[in-house]
Length: 325
Image (cartoon, rainbow, N blue to C red):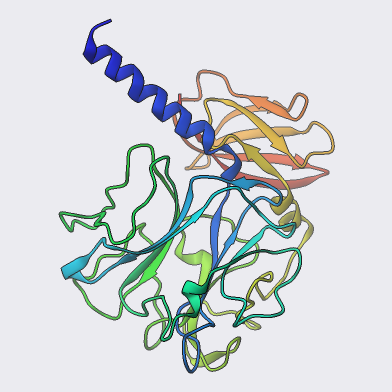
């Protein structure tokens, strides 16, 4: 076997291993971020994730990227999550328990003193918060946008799972992932995902504003979609918690591996169910029924992003599904 072919096969194997190592991390999302609590920032800053309850995270990194034009793409913070099991309520809290003593027992807590350093660890201005799967470790203070074009240059095999950010009004700032939060005045102190929204890379999935206490927002400085009853809820389900049956089912049903090559396992089902696959325009591409809680897509479903709809006890449950052939 010549050296160039051998090198190509090694690269393909590396990418495939990266894909299948990714399977337990489906639907892993940023859920709540607090960067500027009232008073001293330490130890009240935190980042919260939401995922499939009971699944295990490996090769996952929480990264915070600088947005200032002079140093855009610098990785200001890296928090590796390896062999971490998501809590029974689907939440992972990353912060310091010095600032929060009443985190629900169903929440997985990553207690890190870096969130208790004087003055805080998270920047308040031009910044992006991201969740990344990467077979190659993400590196603190490395520049992941060397040409400052606004696109992250991630390691080979890395997948950006979710991202959100904001600016302090600097028109030259770089925000990565495409989601830039705004509000009526000022820069967000905190951002909260709407409870039932599990769409990654989506501005409408979030509300945000300034905080006047550790949990209360200033009504005069919020996003235009700020909901009645919106609060910060460290380590707990976000409010307003208008959970219905469909939303609970969405949290309990998981699909693995995701991305996958067309063969998927559906966790959380009590019996086999009917399903459909649609493209992002809403066009139905395939219908079927799970077999032994698994589903297999025909080769006519090419690589791409799709919407999987499952009929669970008469309730429509939807999941994003990434197919890599």
